[in-house]
Length: 264
Length: 320
Ligand SMILES: Nc1ncnc2c1ncn2[C@@H]1O[C@H](COP(=O)(O)OP(=O)(O)O)[C@@H](O)[C@H]1O
Ligand SMILES: [Mg+2]
Image 1 (spheres, chains in turn orange, purple):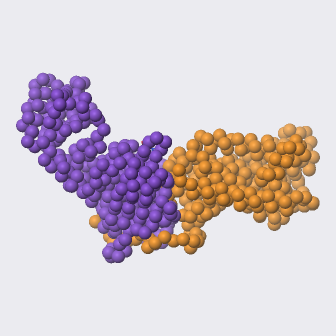
Image 2 (tube, chains in turn cyan, red):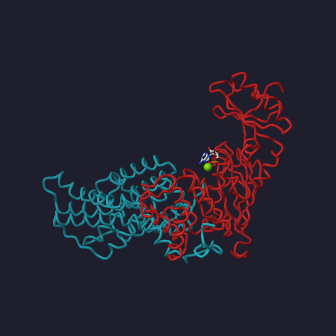
Image 3 (cartoon, protein in one colour):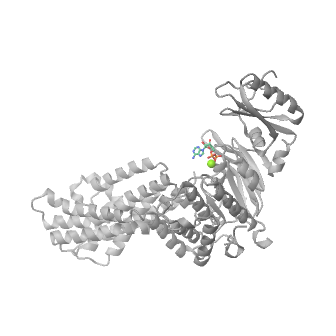
């Protein structure tokens, strides 16, 4: 025989349930994703950062003189855009790419629980989006000399915003089997997030009915909690916003888990 | 390997049915693989082999039927399927941005093995399959055959009780193909059941313990390679090289179903008909229709062709 028995790794004695191996599996899966994005990771991070900076600086091209309040509004909305683009647009496109490349099926057959698989994906998306958040804020601060006041609430604001966005995107990516359809739908999501959700512009600018519709979606509330964490002063509606995002977080996680476990 | 560690891990498929629209990809397949057995799934493209293994590993859900490994119901419990089975997909593994050794080691870790063991076993597999010169090469620079071998290592670094290999030898060079077969046999010797999908009859004949012939979603024959040939034991294979471009000549009524690939026409005849077969073939040469012929013992390939052939034979036969 070609192999000596000494080094053979024997099959498992039974099936492991519960969270016993989760920590290790999580690290292995994050390493897998980072390694498979190895050639793209730097580019992805740079492109995200540039697009954030583009929004922050872009408004100064539209107006001769920008009121500081407007600059503050946009700069504090851009982190939400950054995190949503990664989780809701780039994430599904990466999964679509896995389908084309053949890794999708292989990943689906690995002995890793669904929650660990999703947690690893979330971590990778967060890593791709965080540098852009920091860079956008720094550039905004330098360019407009903003009265930013960053509180500890930035942690839940960033984590929850990214989580809800990433899990919605993940559910979508698993639900859609055709890469081309994923591309088109994520295109549409960009459009919705920029044009029809009050993230970079105030809610008052929208027709009342659209503002009402937005109440049921998480995007508007993400902008509220992000602003509250980045500025001082009164922040009406923060608790409500957290509550709605909280519900969406649970819904998104459930959807992702469901789609991840689906067998055609 | 002690007897007890692999005891009880029989793999069973019972009356498995899977449709895609109107196509019955699996149409009531039943089979059983014992621990330590290398079991071949043999059949033409589109027969339903990959569909069967994808249902086993939890990528597809059967319309009806059961798949069990030991006491575990793999259809109802895909978590168990993923932990207890390892799988090499028919499609190429996605390792373009991984280094060869890294891809294998990371797979071993994800499959739950300890780092030290993973390192040792990876080194062994790399040596056994003679992949050493590429151990630090990026996947995107590897040839298709080498990638295939890396995929094999990834799937079997920490094997399950059932190891599923969907066309593992595709693109692999003849030398390493032999080494690969040794490793597959070693998995069996270790107590793993190996479910091996292939359409290469000659290879399967040498390397599997038992095999199933699948055609149109059905299991048309099952047994050891020699038992499948037994039906053909009193048969001989008559092969005629036709002159390029000629129409397929009418076959004598006493010949088996003919198969023409290119200019190669193959059929089976009974031993007793050998002299008539020779004079028929010689007649074709005299008539300028054939260039040469060969008459030999039937092989597994003949059983395969006989059992899976869909070609309507009536049109090719002469007077019935
Ligand atoms: N995802 C799918 N959707 C629709 N038809 C499929 C799908 N997968 C396989 N088929 C069909 O099922 C049949 C069996 O396919 P497959 O199991 O891949 O065959 P094999 O592996 O034996 O070559 C074929 O007719 C194939 O076209
Ligand atoms: Mg196949």
